[in-house]
Length: 157
Image (cartoon, rainbow, N blue to C red; front, side):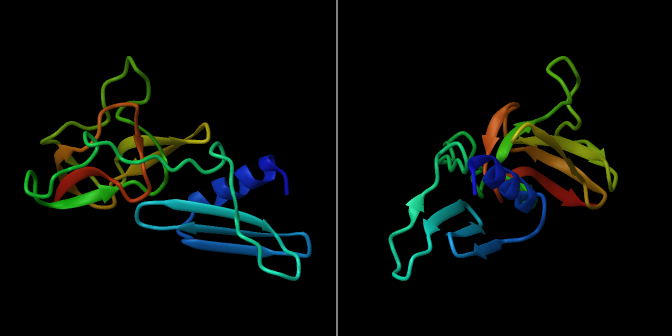
């Protein structure tokens, strides 16, 4: 499987709720696992013996450490969170000149777009799953985001 096919496979998996994917054939074995904080991609040849997994190139499955600015201290703001469903880049607005989709203190309706998360040049709209109030926006515009990382602290209404 070439890198282009692998990237397409990762893209399809990140767009679903699948947490683990495994593909095995005579030539290769591919295992993709999505967890709370990391996304792991392993590729290895599939000979009769078990070799050590070959690390995937960084461009295929980036795993960046969250920065201190991205972390939301639990004692600072309480409430439920809306977390990122994928690894990517967080955007508060549709373009640099546009107003943010939501502001702190704003009440949003079910289905309203809260932000965009760009992954592999594909912009994914993150929508409110229920009516709620935005208590805190956890990230700055154009900041990297990990799978499961809080985007917003909210209060259900």
